[in-house]
Amino acid sequence: MTPDDERLLRRAIALANQARADGHAPYGSLLAGPDGAVLVEAHNTVRADRDISAHPELKLARWAARELDPDTAAATTMFTSCQPCQMCAGAIARSGLGRVVYALSADQHDELHPGGGFPGVPQEGPALYEEARVPVDGYY
Ligand SMILES: [Zn+2]
Image 1 (cartoon, helix red, strand yellow):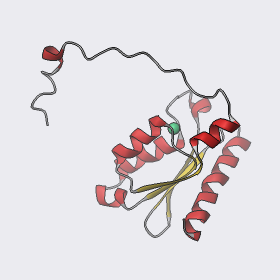
Image 2 (cartoon, rainbow, N blue to C red; image 1 turned 180 degrees about the horizontal axis):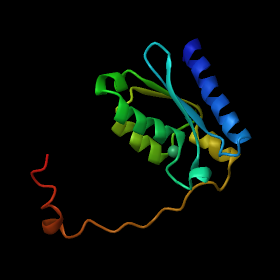
Image 3 (cartoon, rainbow, N blue to C red; image 1 turned 90 degrees about the horizontal axis):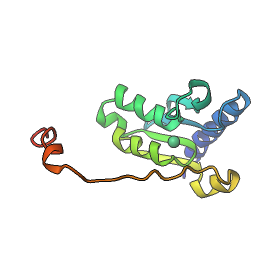
């Protein structure tokens, strides 16, 4: 971690502090270009938006996928106040970002927010392979 990384990570923590002060859940993130310039910032708005996907990391991943070409996206770094959750990690992988730097790990976060996890939802499958493969087969 470089001094510039620490500076940008501190900015993500400041966004989390500001989110909390404004009545939002305490999480903040930003996306920086290869020169360290901040491209976009976000904070958690799950409560205000009544949107379970309104995590800052997911907002930034969606922004990058929409606004950046793949080479530019791959040259960015996301700085975030907490390690991205599984939902956001999936979106980050699909967005093609180059790197993620986080402050609190998921385990450290869980120590501060015991019982904050979500129950697993049972899934059933695979099923109906011959029917389900028709729309997918040959698409790619
Ligand atoms: Zn998340």
